[in-house]
Image (cartoon, rainbow over all chains, first blue to last red; front, side, top):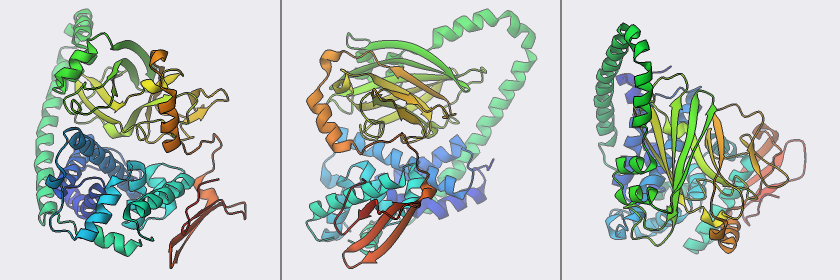
Length: 158
Length: 310
């Protein structure tokens, strides 16, 4: 079993997955700070849970799933507390960019995860299916439905 | 929208420049703390071996003590600092179940559940009912489960409803979240999900298993709509039927829910390798085609006009 507590492994994990997981968390969370918290908590969970991975793909899938779970939990808690939206926005982002980001975040979890992995990470449908443990056909359908919803929200020809 | 536009939008998000450095330092610090904690655990084990003879005499007393320290659902909610929910678990609407299934290395006990609006501190100002369920796990070999080492995300505890596909009614479609902690060697799950009372006129289950999203390698749907674990599913698993009040069912809400979430179900498995997927960039976006490898017939075509799985 790989020990995730060594300096070398910690550096590798953070460097290899940090950016990818941050952007994934940001597909669910409005605030960059919340996304950073979510990813840090996932890394801490990796450290303490010490899961056994078959290979690098299994490791990556675990991190992606855990990040999606944690981001959804944080989002739900924030929604329950009715946080004002202006506290959660990104002042440095462009307005048209905000539209796209907001639209992606407004999608149900099941659609946004597939959309993000496809459009940001460049995953194929097969890779997404393997990562999320879903049939490939379901991923294809979610991609289509998520994309259709985005199209409606953005009112643009995608 | 294409991948370039999408990436550019997300790349503009202003994350902290020192995130990686801060995170690596945080992890290193936590790793050192864990190393110290492990030493304490090892010491305790050595000490336990030294008193084996005395332990045999004290076995009965230990068993009684263990029974006394088993938390109730109300106490579990209290441990999360949720007084409202704790009170609800002791109120008239709470359903006590305390049914145990021994599976794999675990004894899985569904302790109880309660449904209603305004039951927790986070949703007290939200006008939507939710269901909260508490499940406990203990290892059959007596080894204690610990918060730090138990893999919460490795297992799933999810509601399912007969007559509805497991892919349609589950944690992911019901907006659920699970939290957990260990105390006295027992791991406690608190599941918080959109209210499942709308399904109460049919058999409603609480499933526990090792795995992620429900699929047909885990569950099978019988002809009468009832749900069971697949015969060849080998991970730890338990399926509890929930004694909900049928009078609380809301068929119209169920219909609306399924319209939004039901994507069909088949018990027939088609290995992913049996699909041929092609992707092609077109002026209108990506063209994705999925078809069974043994059939020339296209089953799904995605974009420019989206279509559903046949």
